[in-house]
Length: 424
Ligand code: DOR
Ligand code: ZN
Ligand code: ZN
Image 1 (spheres, rainbow, N blue to C red):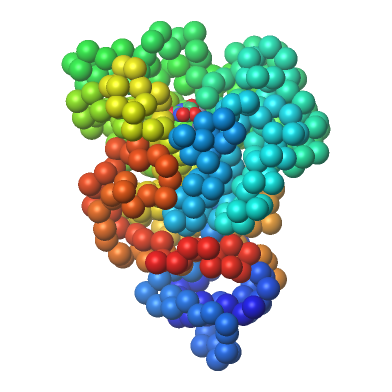
Image 2 (cartoon, rainbow, N blue to C red):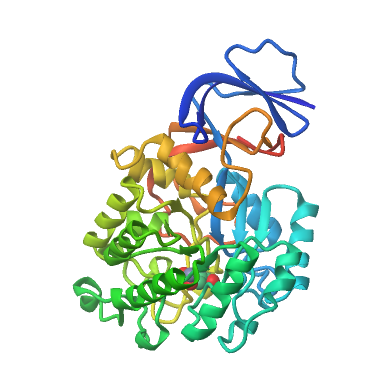
């Protein structure tokens, strides 16, 4: 099977080059990258006026499978992924049951393999049942192929236990993906603690709720030597601490979600729970710091924290609805609209933060467009404009604050292992 992607601009963050070229794919592997290839292929994708980029890698999604299939399944989740240009996703383990042993890892991996769209890598929890009391079967999950451990949804509040987990992560050479939230400081908060939300009479979650755990986790990573990846950073001081830790040589990387670099708490619409996520939308100072941190490459990764919930679950108002919004099908457009077009990022940086850096952190041979490498690719039109309509989503979750937003940047085709898994 020969696939030819013609006349695109190929972005390869592997050697930081951008050039006009055709890409020939044979049996799932990139065979040749060169201008004006004249080969008769079985399938041709016209990529004129488009970028050909490494498939996006989302280090942070919730597929809700097993146990919450009314919100999402592996199948609807990967369909959403490839629609959004993602060829690999890391699934968070806060499912029902939680992923704390090899059997649940195998269940998700087998399901994803049978569907055969995007690659799904299932992360394992740090503690059994996410109860924060005893460590999960980390060795068993490593054998089953987890790319990382994460207690996402919460922090492991017992620092000694977390330190033990980090030591095991070093032993098994996997990163620790950290959701930073001191639960003892949340106090029933549902949105950011600031003037705008006070006026809405909503209880606040202060920046310190995140910052104290970011600080603690950096200290623990420094002591253990673990590779710490900070999930969904939302505060200006998180950015500062990441910068300081990197300067000290601590193995720390950090991610930012599109909603956190796009919206502030002032954007929250009256009692609309599609603006409720954890960590919450912060202030303009935080948004500014996140953008600057991305631009300066202090912040390494853009990930979605795709967190589908049903319309009924989200329809009960901000105070009572669960935290979380979907993100797989709006991420690339928001990066172009809010960061690339406004001069914060180059297209190369977009490819680094959405493909190359996640691959490096996860130890995957992905995130590049190079001959001999697996053909996980996205054909992306960075000029195409459209209006976000949740009814177009493949995800079961329609819970987005971006419905009706005019954006730029559209996924035209997604290729996984040389197979076209999405085409417009
Ligand atoms: O907004 C969020 N949703 N934050 C989390 O930490 C968990 C996630 C979910 O699982 O819904
Ligand atoms: Zn989280
Ligand atoms: Zn999450």
